[in-house]
Length: 296
Ligand code: SAM
Image (cartoon, rainbow, N blue to C red; front, side, top):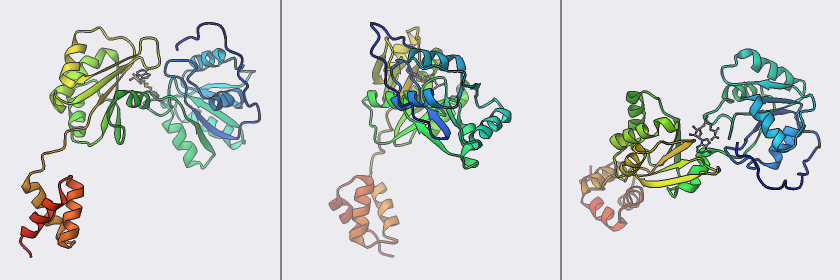
């Protein structure tokens, strides 16, 4: 975690009123220690039980922000902890206590543990809430310059090349910005596979060490980035984002097929409007082609 530097700022005034019962999923910094919400700090200061993927990391974060543990129980939990830990946490929640859960960094459940726990709490119909905050995927998306209207978070792909290429082929035509997590030592291999599977001309972005001292955002084509990173010894944490596939060329045949389908249930005018909107072609052209289609 990025340490604080310079003179200490004035201490924060945390809300020390009782934290409501239930599981509180806390997002923690992905680099800069001060990227944590006041509400997350309130919960860490007031929860009856503290649960963490790594209790040492959570203790360190609390120390940085001057939050005392005060003898409260600290429990380690990850998705392979087994039923026992979840059962214990559910029992604490049934007593009406508040439990804070933080993963190692960022938002729990996002390529991090927490899913099995959250699912068990939901299934038991016990109270649960989230103190949202940092997430590397969202931070990278906002900085990438790629369209943010639709995105697909693909997390980590397999480290085996054939499985990785097949996963890339599955998302090749998805009309959304694609977001991947990757380790720095596999970045070059991932970019090479992306170039082979998605095409070297696609725009892509590598975001490295977000919110940290050596933050870097490298933009370019997949082929260009693959070449650049093949020559570098990459350190730190990375997110890779890839622009959506260019839309297929809309030929007359494509418009005709769409119109034939639409004309089965719509009048000519409506079918032309529908097809012009879905394919992004001129309504006038769609209407003219619609008029020329055989009527049956
Ligand atoms: N739960 C976290 C989140 O909300 O983003 C993700 C945890 S996952 C185990 C770790 C991966 O997230 C890293 O390998 C990297 O791909 C990405 N990541 C986390 N912090 C990052 C940072 N500061 N800069 C770039 N990528 C980061």
